[in-house]
Length: 176
Ligand SMILES: CC(C)(COP(=O)(O)OP(=O)(O)OC[C@H]1O[C@@H](n2cnc3c(N)ncnc32)[C@H](O)[C@@H]1OP(=O)(O)O)[C@@H](O)C(=O)NCCC(=O)NCCS
Image (cartoon, rainbow, N blue to C red):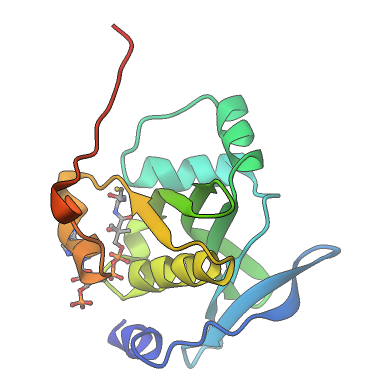
């Protein structure tokens, strides 16, 4: 486990390559062989995710279920959808996810960051976030925001996110 961490920290590769991860669809992925058994972690930008697999991932961290038709719509209208895969031989497993909405010019907001509990605390959440930020930066987005649950504020702090910079407050409106 520590071995993965050492691979993903510091010298992690975010260089993209074209590879067929899903049948018939060459996708931009970043892959690292990290174990003697040949298993590796890849990132994909596909929106063609199996929503039931995504729901299982969200279930695994105890998130409330959302209507799949709305999840599909949210994915379709997201600026960026990042999935993280554990791949061994012909088998692949969805182990992480993040997406971002954007005005395509100045701002992006990251949502739904998740790593499967089996793969947490090994540096993969950090890699997923760094990959997502790299993609947003390469689209010339300079203002990246997110809403952190209280228990993960430190996780995002470590990645350079600031709470209330210059006193700016996130404000919410909810229907009655
Ligand atoms: C939050 C989450 C994505 C982190 O993923 P992860 O793979 O466990 O994180 P990493 O192993 O990459 O941790 C990176 C660093 O953040 C720290 N960290 C991880 N989770 C943390 C937490 N909850 N609080 C404080 N620090 C945390 C790690 O110690 C590590 O520090 P280091 O760089 O000094 O070694 C994952 O725990 C998760 O999916 N949680 C459930 C869903 C969730 O809460 N998502 C966020 C919604 S806002």
